[in-house]
Image 1 (tube, each protein chain N blue to C red):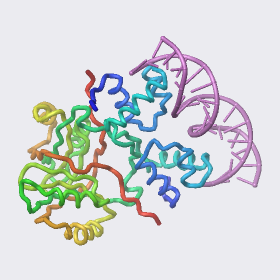
Image 2 (cartoon, each protein chain N blue to C red):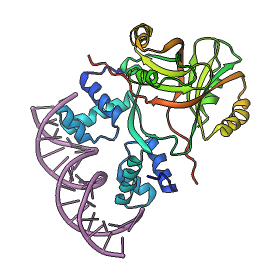
Image 3 (cartoon, rainbow over the protein chains, first blue to last red):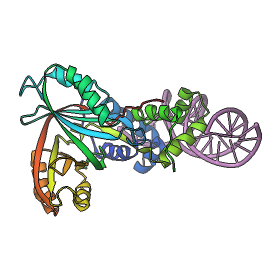
Image 4 (tube, protein in one colour):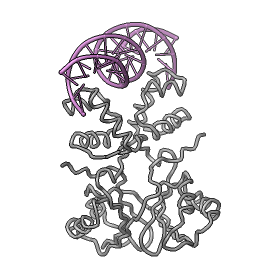
Length: 156
Length: 156
DNA sequence: GGTGAAAGGAGTCATCC
DNA sequence: GGATGACTCCTTTCACC
């Protein structure tokens, strides 16, 4: 399935990435199109996995997830990092991101927990049981100034 | 305004963080409540900034944002990092995250660009013009295995 | 791909509990 | 806080272009 996007698609993406709960009727009005045509485009964007999901961004503090950390993880396989290690890390709900990175460290993992005690518990219990992990280097976030996942959408 | 959340609120958050486009009527059915009561709770969660926004997660590849990098930035102010530097970094649309971190580096920044050439352009043009930046250390992401912002919501 | 009509469903609000 | 009912508007499908 090809994923060629025209400017109307890009406009839809721009509107929805900033307000996923916009009504289809409002989308149609913004684009000066019939609601049915817009609905079909949105469905196709979902099918083509251009739109991956719709999320409500929740304040981590409000649900008591006060600690954010980035952990650099060296894994046994060296440069050709283990898929198994990555999958085991990804399976943890506290782990929001797992990136395979260039350089001497193998993975960069973003983790959110209640507090430093629960981060320690996670590292002692869950992390230490994943085979192939050689070492970890943890960076604690003191304050988050910006956090969003909106992409720069370049029109054609 | 207090932000005490009961289990119904937490259920709403859990449902909406995985599907921000769920209809209010469907939410009400899941919770066995009247639609009007659920609507009022959702509005309060928005007012109280427990729900920060609703996002459509877009595939970065689909909109040609193929490069992801994390940049560690040391700023002049040392441990009491400059708010100005953080704000200048946050103002860049390619910058998705700005975290003030513990340790010798001052900020950790998550950046998405089209390719390595546009990352270099960003660093040469935008970054180098921000006063107070002493040095940068860039980590390029080769592959992203997991990327989500869903939080672990602990029921009471 | 897009339009427009039509039916069923959802959003919203005043009112009552 | 939550439920009900009523009105309006939206969603979704389908025939047609």
